[in-house]
Amino acid sequence: MFYKLGLSQSQLEFVDVDVEGDVPFFVDPRALRLLDSDWADECVALVQDFFRHVLSKIASHEDFEAKWLLGMLGEPNETHLGLSRGQPRGHGLGPQSAVDVWEALSQSEALSSGLLEDLEDTILMIPGISNDLISDITTNIIRGPLIEFTHQSCEYYEIPLTAAVDSGPLWDLQQHRWDNKFVELPMIDHRKLLLVPKAIVRRRLEYNPEEYYNHVILAALQTEELNANSELVELLKNGTGRVTKKALREKYGTGKSVIVAQTRERPQLLEDYRELKRSEPLQPLTNWELSQDDESGATDWDGLLARVIAVEPGAEGATDYHRAIEALLQALFYSALVNPVRESHLHAGRKRIDIKFTNAARDGFFWRVHQHHGVPAGYIVVECKNYREDIGNSELDQLAGRFSPTRGKLGLLIYRRAVDRDTCIQRCKDAFHDDRGWILPLDDSDLGLLVEERKAELSSLSFSLLEQRFSEIIS
Image (cartoon, rainbow, N blue to C red; front, top):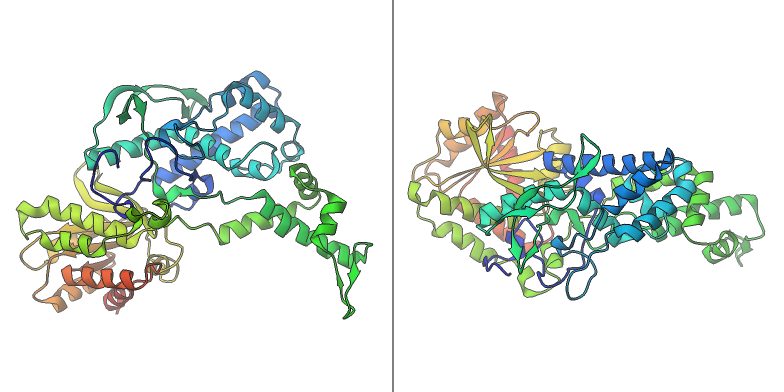
C-alpha cells in the first residue's frame, strides 16, 4: 500500500486499491440497499433522488436541464475502481456521452411505460448502459458520503489530508442540483484519492440483462409456446414437447429493445426478477477476492490475535488494545459486520461507543439473532475494556446505555479475563431479563476460540461460541 500502513485487506474497511491504475470492481447501487445504516440510507436516497429527478426532466421535455444533470457525471478517477489499465480513466458520462444517454432514455419505451424505477433498471433496458457506467454514475452521486467515509478512515489510520481540494460535483438532495465545495482529501501525485467501503463493491452488478432475458423472459416464453402448442414445439422420442431457447431467440430476437418489448407485455416478469434479487442478493466480496488472489488477501489470524494478547492490561494500554480488537473483529466478522465506526459519539458527545459495526449479515449468527430471535441488531455495539480486574455491573450498565431500538440492542463486551466467569455471565443474564439488551461477554480465551473457528471454516459466519454465549444469556 502507498501509505505503508502495514495492514492486509482483511484489516481494512475500504478497498485497498492500486493508486497507479484501477482495480476491476464496481460500486453496486443495490449493495447499498443491503446495508441497514444511516450512511447507506443517505447514499440510497441520493441515488434515487438524482435518478428520479432526471427522469422527471426527460418526461417533461426539459431537455437542456436533463442533459446538464447527466453531463455532470464525470469520470470518478479518484476511487481507482473500474476496468481501466494504467492511469485510471473512469467511464463517467461527459458531454457527448450524456447526450447519448439522454437520447437513449428519451426514446426508450421503458421510460414511457413506467418500467424504470431505479438506476439499476437501466442496465436491463437502456442501450449503452453497462456495469462500469452504472458504477461510475453511482460513485458520482454518492461522492459526498464517500468523502465523509474517507475522512473517518484517514483520521483513524493517520493518512495525511490536503486542505482546500475541489470536491467535484456533489448532489444536493434538498435543492435537487449539483454543487461543489472545497474539502480535505488525501492526495497522491497531485491526484485525489477517495476511499470506498469494501462492503459495497462487486465484481459484477446485481442486475444482468443476459441473465434476465435468458432465465426469466425466455423461460416464460417457453411455457407460453408449449401451452399454445406452437410451431416452435419439438416432440422428443418419449412424446414430450420442448421449445429451445435458440428457437425463441430466432423468433423474438435479442437485445435490450426486445427485453423492453417483452417486459411491457409481461410486467410481472420484471417484478419476479427484482424479487429474486432481493431474496438472493450477491454477497460482498471476500478479502481474498478484494486482494485479487494475491498474498495480501490471506488473513494472519495468529498475528491478529497475538497483537491483542501482547497488550499489557491497564489504562496505559487502552488505545493499543482498542485498535488491536478492532482489527481482529473486522477480520473475524466480515462480511457479516461491516463499516466500523470508531469512538462514535452519542447524545452531543455525552456518551461514546468504542466501535459500532453495521450488521449486513445474510446468514450466520448475526443474521439469526435478528431474524429468528427478534433482536434489534441493525448495529452491533462493541465496548473494549483493557482491565486487570473482573468486569462489574458498571461496565455492563455502560454498554446497555448505548443501546436503543434504532441503533440496536445487541453488544459485545470485550475484556481481558474473568476470575469469576459465572458471575460475569449472570450479570449479563440479569441485564437481559431486565430488558436492557443482549450483552455477550468475550475475554482473551474466547477470542482465541473464535479465531480457531474461523480458521477451520473460513467461509462460515455461524460462530458456535457466540450461539452458545447467546443461549447462556437468554436462558
